[in-house]
Image 1 (cartoon, rainbow, N blue to C red):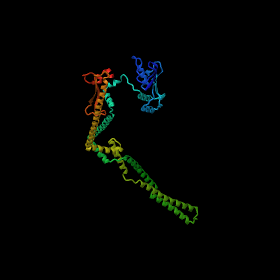
Image 2 (cartoon, rainbow, N blue to C red):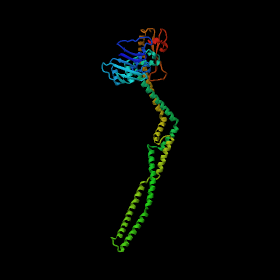
Image 3 (cartoon, helix red, strand yellow):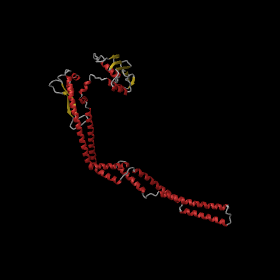
Image 4 (cartoon, rainbow, N blue to C red):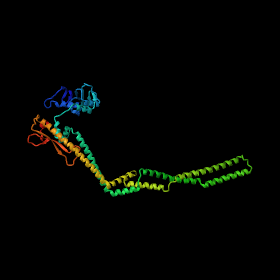
Length: 450
């Protein structure tokens, strides 16, 4: 409960400290006396939108402080705690707001800095404000449905209709999508058939482009490597090199024989050098043969299938040509092939899928109609209760000849929305014998206020 309101420099008010006791408190006064200023100040303290025009002319800052008795509502205490503020048992709750002349404002809860949003949430939980134009909303018939549903506690029925409407929308969209896909496939059946046949002949595989590109690179390098190895083989000389080395070895051996026949000492340096030369030539012959064998082995390692490179390139070019024709990538060809086959299948047995989808949509419509019927019945029962309740209030308000009713009007045929299948309007007849009519057309300002 509000127990005190302190105002400083707001509009015409320099300073005001208002204390409120229990029971009914009435503020009276002539028009312009300042009653609205007090309400504006209270709204400021409760987190309402701040307007620099509230600051009194010549003042640097305005402030409004509202004091409430210690809250005992568990929901309110939980809200205050969730927003980061602590209120000790028995402690008053103080909401304060300052507003500078430049429009900047600051908010406080029990002198702790607070965000304006938090202040507003706490304020809305503490105070309910009804202004003099509060009934204007009744003139808009679009608000009547929500008012009736709220009065009747019809949220479960509303949820049922909304869920059924969502399922129906999904089912009808499925039917439309299947029909559109089947129509599109039928319009392009010949093209689809040809494209699928081409892809079936090509039989693209996943990651094939990467594999072929790698293979082509290896095969291209292999051809050059084999040519290089042939040059190496030719440079080693093959049999010619062996013949020359053999001839050289024989010549050195003849020289050693002649030197020995001349009676040269076997330990003579000349004979030793000739022997070393013969050994070196012999080693060269052995190493040359090993080198030739190694070169031949390396060449054999590049022994690929003849024409393999041409085949790889031809396959790669065919895949890329197909991708260009179909305006896609080579990697997407396998998936596109499956999609073509699926679209053609829609032509062949799409009617069955469409029929199944239409049955599901029909079932969804029936479920919606049942949910809508339950909501309509609940609304009619709530309308009877509301009518009876309003009629009991009209006599004491000096409207004993007035009559009130809730009118139901079906929506357009076939329209199934999340709010049901009828519009709701509050109607009134203010005099005996007169016809019912909309509130905005029949009720006077005074009648509407009452």
